Image (cartoon, rainbow, N blue to C red):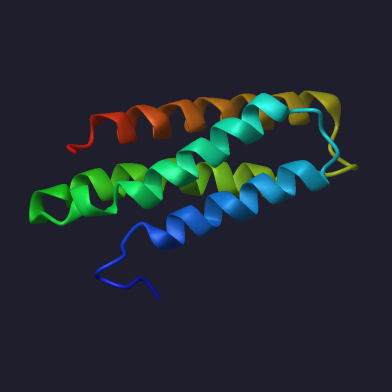
Length: 108
């Protein structure tokens, strides 16, 4: 359950789980894992910037990017064909970049 005083913590936890799944999938993606961890730290440090009511739209945008990252990392595994794996990694990469961009736009 999302606490009103910590709206980004569930998103940060989802990113932590996504990075762990990516590592467990045995893929050599150190840059992507570093970017996911950077976004996770950004979410935790940006929590104060989302205290305004107008930030609901920003929170929804952040939530959408994290959901995409978490969902695609769940699909990674040994049975995934190379084309699907490439598509998953490209989608994860694109959403991590979007997430970092959104975090960079937050005040503070």
